[in-house]
Length: 451
Image (cartoon, rainbow, N blue to C red; front, top):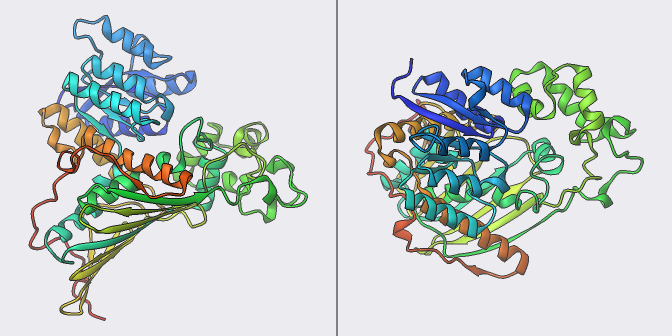
């Protein structure tokens, strides 16, 4: 049953757009009243799920924007979810902001700084709310870390290590064979995948970095590493059974798992049969040899950060890992925190005791997905529209721009081999304040276990 009367339009009905819209439908707090999606099959399926009439199902976001301009309100809905491809974020965001839509924008904000600034200026002119989908901010796990730091449990944070284990098959799927394989079509890996992590480090440390260096390259998924006898496609390859990146093994193994059928298999084919999968691998991009493609994004990268306080950070992204949760260590003057997206261990330097904390209410799933956070950001966005209270969202357009500027600076550092000073606006306008100290954060039954 609808409670808040919020209406939403969706530009891009792929996995991300469908996920947020499905959450709105499940809670009944908002109604999806229009969709723009170039794929006719996907558009029809989405429209049927949400009961959208044919006149509100558009082949592109421009048609949807034009239809809104012809109404008395000047728009079709209160808010719009923009989940188009990365390079097509800026134009719809600027136009929909001009029409007065509140915007939930899939990350990255834009693929270039000038476009991100255009988005910021557009939403500030219109007074619209904009939330970039940095979903890691929305996990109970993240909230728990911030409460522990704010409560002084580790003293002053001095340094942080953060690892994003992309996963060998996930990297091959999305960044070698998939839509994010080339910088000129989407953006650098640090932006398309790891802007989540840079933003999260800013959120947790409570500071925007002022200097950055970075190293990384495309080391493995290159033609010179192609095994002897390998074919251009996995279905024709005599070495495929022994290859870690076998498309045949990966996608056929998805058939027996509902979660894997939803992703990644649904990106490959909608025919979830063995014959359907093999047909897609025979002709489509996901059946290509990982050593014979046109990919150029890095497969590993490190980023070193210096914060205004003098604290430092080290971030690592690697393709060569299991597909698991991110892992973090935060080193403070009075204690040490280590976490894996689900559980935190705190070592107190005064007592020597170790405490184990678990966030209440959900966290990232064990295989690295962030389902609970996807739901939380959709809920927060709808609530912000319903109440007119943008503070229900833990970041705004300015803070998102600050995080993106760190990424662009890191890429300049990587390409130039230098340390880059990061130009930002005053930090107090760009970061969310830490929460007030919490005397007793939620803990697991293992709290106080000493070693």
